Image (cartoon, rainbow over all chains, first blue to last red; front, top):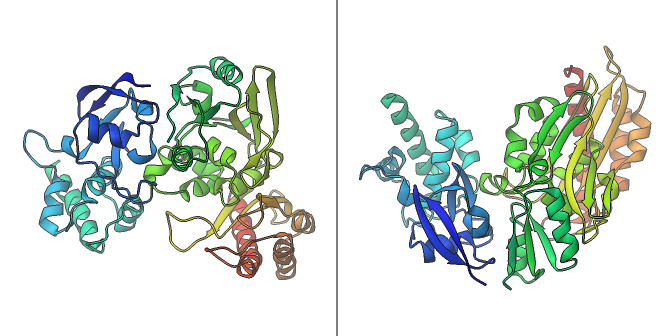
Length: 158
Length: 292
């Protein structure tokens, strides 16, 4: 049975009708039309479906949409401000931190949560924070370099 | 996945009333990192899913020098892993919590889930058992408490009744010169299940390195996490010597009843029980020596 709920995503309210079994991933993609969040493994292993809930990365494929009510959600669409890309987005481009791009939204959101908590992470801390995001193209090194570059850039702009 | 009605009670009384009303047709959820996948696979098909994350007692993380640590069943693992008090008083619990899945999973997954799912490889179980953790269950019939090691009875089996809610865990306050370690054998630092897990909590005689008592628990080598009473008994009252370590390691290997599966063979697991037990004891004693 469908019930009305409100999801708050990227600062905007989405009034949608969902079933109890609807996954957060499907609610965001199919009801809110935000397709930046990707479906990879559907079992919590790959991190392509990562979104932020109250600033913390979660796997939207293993979360019921009902459970996300009242949380401030962020998808990759919410990261750029006034048309200006986030330093992480710019550095992923600059450093070649992506190829096919499927893992990138989740990868960048996990990295954002890390930098918000720990603005100057070591490369080990970056690898730990991104362990739940798989990338089959880059070999990870350029992703790590992009996160390091973004953290350095943010440090300079403070 | 079969559809269901999603319920989100805000008190224990409300939650246990729902469990009683819909007895046998419910599943309790917190992070849903296990449950959703199992429902997707058709293992469970409840009519009602009860989200217990809005109940204040279930998200408690409170330390009292007399009572110890009260840990709500649906406190996210990531919060346990990063909590300064847990890191200081129960470093092995923080470590064990950090061994589960990824940051994404630990932001949702909870000790209540790890305990009630009760897989042999559940990473926080050996450490919690080595800390002599008590679990508190509530239902409309009343409350009961028991040691966690008596709560888990087999692979994915516990004594919880279908109308009961796991409320919280009570972990005794560590006496001075008490600490512990959790060591996990896996193929990569994160996102992997344990081939073997060893947890040890050690109390030393103050000002001495004589072991007052030690609680040793093995994970992933039997249907449930198992204590090693033989090793615990032979270490109590002694300083750690190479000979005692060897005996303790062998006792652990004898206690193990591992299976061979895709992750490791039974022989390899048993061999590792010996080695990892010795390692865990050496590290736990070292930590306890420095724990005030």
